[in-house]
Each structure stands twice: as structure tokens, then as C-alpha cells.
Length: 282
Image (tube, rainbow, N blue to C red; front, side):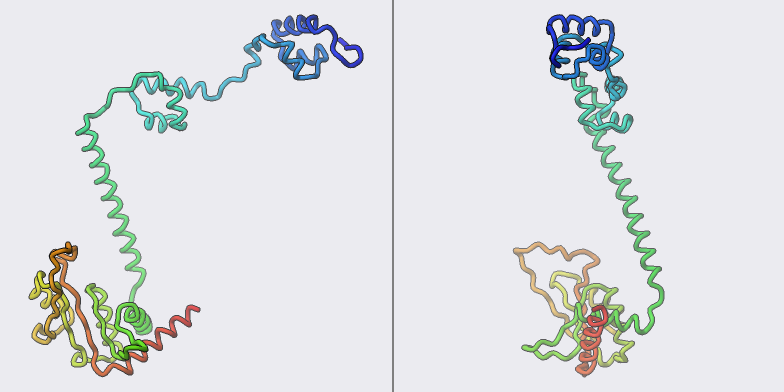
């Protein structure tokens, strides 16, 4: 069919033809080509109100998922369980099944809490095992320390935790205090590497007055390899009733302070070595 002057002829006559073709099962594109109507606006006006034939309707890819989701919901599954089963979003599941009755809880509140706590306990057990394994592998990777390794480790340790000389307070001597037995062990090995003998080292325990003072003194004396009688008088921290102490229990032993006499030259070596490390990484 052609149209005079490039325009479409009688609209009603054209609509009747379009409707008849539509009811025969033709698609919009087929009707367009048959009637030579290439203006989409006019084409849709010609077909207004006429439903598309079934064969032209695109199948909805989620129809099957929707039906399956409804089946699973009717079986009593939760949104989370349906999501795991079908791999679709919970928002879609909610739209598909929100008209269905909510399933009865599978467990009582007590059972639910018990299952949750059991799951958390299992998770913590797994996490603890992973932590221990990570630490074990890291520990074994270190291996034996050379004298240079120990020297540099000790310099860094002292500069982080030891007393340092200031322009306003001259303190060119080694004074170190810490509560970690491992740190104290490394520090004592470092002093031995530097040739510091036992007689040059003075030890003093610093601890809260309400702790097991005698037990702490014995612990630090054993670690340092000296008799308790050789420890200087223990420094006690007064109890403040307005604060709540967290450093309590059997593992609290206060701190051990280690002072090295005649150590000004040694202190200068440590300070110089520290700045050598800083320059080395720069």
C-alpha cells in the first residue's frame, strides 16, 4: 500500500487493516512492512488496545526462579535458605513470596540461641587454630639470630622502650623497663652480646601495691638469673580507689627495670647505631 504525498491516507481504514493483521498473529514489524507505515508513533496508534500475540512475547528469564522460590517458601524455607538454593537476591525473593504465609520457626528461641552459640564456638575454635598456625610459621621462619641480627634488634628495642638522652635532661646511660618477659629476655641477651657483665646490671621491680609482690620478685629474679636478695628495693604503685585496674590476675607481675652502670659510652653507641638504621632504610 502506498500513501499519497508521503502521508498516510484514511486513518480509520488503515487502523482496520492493522487490527486485522494483528489478529492474524503478525508482529508490529511485520505489520509495519506490510502496510508501509514507518512512523512508530502512528504505528502504535493504529494498534492501540490490541494485545500482542503470544509468540511475540519474550519469556521472562526469572519466571522459573520465581515459581521455584514460591515452592521453597511453601516448604518452610527462610529467605537466606532460598537465596543459597537459587542464587538470587533476597530483594527479589521478597517480591516473589511476600504474599505467602510466613513459615513457622524451625526452632524455639532457646534452641536458636544454642545453635548460634555452638556455631560461634566452632568459629572461634577455627580462628584460634588459624592464629596459632600463623604464629608458628612466623616463629619458625625467623630461625637462629646472628650477632648482627641480635645487635640491630636490641638497638631498635632499646630505642623504643629505653630511657633516652634529651637536650634538657642529660641521661647518657642505659635504663630499660618493661613488663613482657620475652622483651626482657631479648634485652638481657643483647646486653650480654655487648659485653655487659652481671655486676654492672641493677634490677628493680615496679608493681602495684595490691599485687603478689613476693611472687613477682621471685619471677623476675629467676628470669634475670640473680638471687632475689640482689634486687633493689621494689617500687610500689599506690592504689587509686577511683580507678578499675585491668592488670590483675596470675599473669600480672609488674615491670622489671634494668639499669647498667658506667654505660655512657655504650649509650652513645646505641644512639649512633639507631640513627644508622634510620639512614639505612632511607
